[in-house]
Image (cartoon, rainbow, N blue to C red):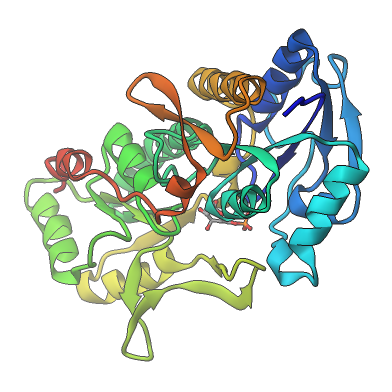
Length: 348
Ligand code: F6P
């Protein structure tokens, strides 16, 4: 394939480091002689022909900026009439010979669908939740962990001053990577993650034992995706509403408040909840995330240059490798048993 023009898009939830990927693709792409075009707002932009050229000027000064200059959406082309065919057709209309798609499992599954239709694609893995299969780390995660850790540090002093249980709700739809990492770094007294069943007796035990040794406050970190016994009598995630996005995801949030109510009634201790929410996804990426995102961007355009399509770049150990796009769709990668056990050694 003689590639001359390369398109790039960012899909799904944003996270710090996306601009570093875009900058790396444009800078390296320019040096290799490619014309780079940006597709705005993820798959929606390709369906609606929102495409604009990118050059060295467009990516100047964006390395440290959060968000994505291309903007993003959770549009699922499969939910639009002839969506996949329209994507393919519009790539041709704009003369895009190869596409770099930066996104999570949803975006990358569509990318793989395009590959099956004969489109030259390369994927770049992205999720703040850090749970994509095939890569040890996603950029944005380190930034989120640092933000959550700072919040936990700050909550310690106020929790201690008031003898309170403080619940910190962090992101993590299916897995508890942010919760476990921030809990470890911030010295949480307990961390609850979607991979493990919640045991209220254990939680109360931890808080009581702390009181017995003169620690009249506790910090509990909870991932938003933790399942609780709901009013229906069935275990389930706590939702903010019943609207789902085009990939079928509900809006999560509120598990901390449900937990707080239950703990207050069981322990008779004042309990407060802090939901970190999108603060974790905002702002400037850490140096680690800038470096990882830059390595991914350079590797992605290099793969285009080597005609290696149908793959995504990934970090395995300390090496950037190319793996089949299908790997990303293998389901969320759970928190490693070793990491959780290390965090658990400090519970109580
Ligand atoms: O999938 C990443 C994530 O940040 C989840 O942790 C969270 O549940 C969700 O996205 C939030 O999505 P939105 O930005 O659409 O509210």
